[in-house]
Length: 252
Image (cartoon, rainbow, N blue to C red):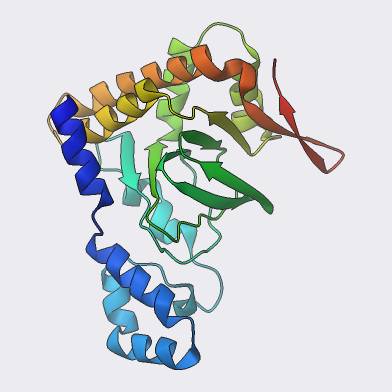
């Protein structure tokens, strides 16, 4: 596994074509002339054909359903997907009807979740509730992975494999899926190599694309959830909203 992990890390650190264009756009936005020249070189049609997101191309907000629906994010027989967040992607508000985990593989990132600024460091995992408006900011060489799971699939994983009553099971079942009283939860795993390896194993597995891949990814996600509960349930950061006032509570 060590050899595969090294190769996948090398692959993740390389800038893909989308990231190169996003970085060019990031630099161009520093002055009006540079932005005009960028938009001349890269037409609206060419950008949209590559499914890139530039907020200036939309009269109002970026349409979440165009980019983040189940049909766009998952194949017909797929329920779990792990992607790298393209570095230098312009900041835009969005939401989606799937379960999302943000994992900071290296470096850092910043999010705004329901208007609250959240800073994540290496090893942090942030679970975001369904249909929660948020942004993502990665404007350096940091590597952030998005783990996406269909809503129905997550219900199956959670209910079947996390039966023990705990404050986290209550959080997920009552708040994420029923009342949505809480928009996110954060696990600070720091330098936990086991968690890192588990997530990278999932990233590697999805390239198999055979009849067993999706079931294995569902099983691996279940293992990941249990590892997080075993190691970090008592120190999970959960914001609690009371009378429209938000505060962060640490469970002990």
